[in-house]
Amino acid sequence: MPGPSAPEGAGSTPGTPETPEQRRRRLAAVFGETLPEQTSDDRDDREGPGSGEAAGDAWLRAQVPPHHGG
Image (cartoon, rainbow, N blue to C red; front, side, top):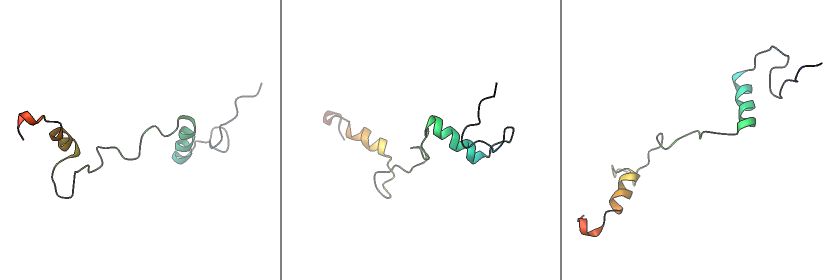
């Protein structure tokens, strides 16, 4: 009884280790792209150039009711 065939993109012969690029492509084909290349932690989410205020802080300030002063 023959064994399972190697998946496409695996090493050319059984027992040959696949390269990191081949492994990444194989896993992406099976699971899809699970994580973005860049997360919000990596980006500079500022309101404007030189404003010094993060987008989350600006949103929070916009949510303060008028009777709490400003």
